[in-house]
Image (cartoon, rainbow over all chains, first blue to last red; front, side, top):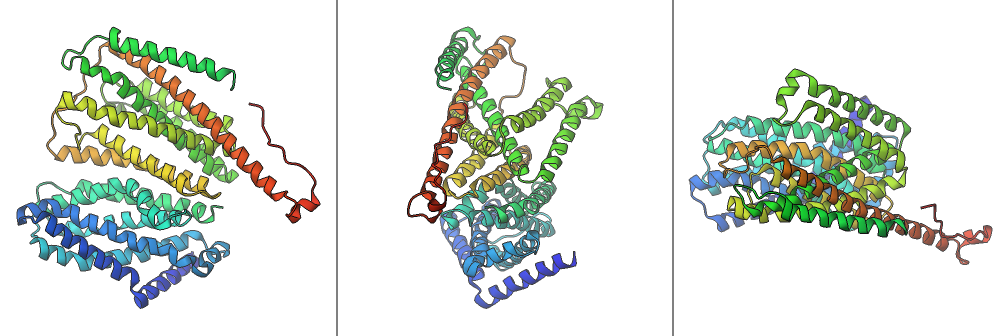
Length: 225
Length: 305
């Protein structure tokens, strides 16, 4: 088990260091979601009361589309110089690689959310009416749901002809229950009209089911020939 | 296939015509909805057929993934047997019995569980190796067609009866839509990926899609309880004469689906054989060094049909 975590940690550090030096994905994600915020602001021009009802959807749509940028980068980076083939022939467990990639993407997307949330609050004059602390488990679980499946499907779409195009086509249909949970849950916390517990449980179930499935099947996808 | 296909096609056409006659002229008119309700004889059988085909796709995909290693094949086999036993016994336990919707008998649930498990082993027995993947592809393609019929007839029916084309919170419509989206993405993956890995990747995606279905169902179910909804449907038992026609209609649709699946299955199998033969032939060309060592000609291999 020690080698599993040391491989995970090594890959994770490498990815974070690469990102730290280039800042490609993070900059692209930040600018993209900023554009989404501004465009939505002009298209809806909501009052404070209305925005509480729609902003849950806007936030998660922005994060969903932005995270695709990071997810597409994940494996494309490993194709150069046949790094992925190197992984495939090495005795390192495939799941260690997968877990590292998921953790890396999780860190990037959480960072993005932490930076973007104040902007949403400013632009839409938000004030949370429900229990605000519940937004934290909602964000963590929701992001994990996006990232774990996204990393998995990115590894799949890298094998197809039009790579970058394939990822959203594969990821979004399967993510619909998670997106529904995040959006409806965030809205009910913001408006304070309904309890959000069910949505947190739904996201937790989604995360457990798909993390298990991803870890179980990743080896098949990586070695598929 | 050559002989049986036209005969079966004519029989299916006759059966469909009979079902149409039953649906339009024999079935009683609905008290509340009038004649509009007769679309049910197309809407519901298509939905059941589509769900069955998607389920076959799931089973074939699991079998295909499991067949890669004998150890995983054994493991999956025991999981399926356990699911079958639990599914057979559980409906009779009083606590579980209460959870079943009214009108659903424990014995029917138990029988369904047995049939589904039986389907797993039958498919594994009659579709060895690569044929499993062809079956999964065929079932998904035909399933998407039937699912499209459901999604088209649904709004046509909803408009005069509910007054709206689409009820975003209606659990059946919305979860069918999501199911349709998932399987379209499955077909897109198969179209966009033409290497040898496609089959495994597609099988993995099919498993993900199947895992998603219960989550979709529960998420929409809860979403619905929090949002005001138009009063829709609301159970109630069906006139036995209507149910009779509905079942006849479903049988006709099943025959039709089987026919389409069968021809599509043979077509896909032939296509792969031709592809393989062409690949082998190009290996045997005079310019190729491999051809110098072996003089064997490669015939287009056709197994017994």
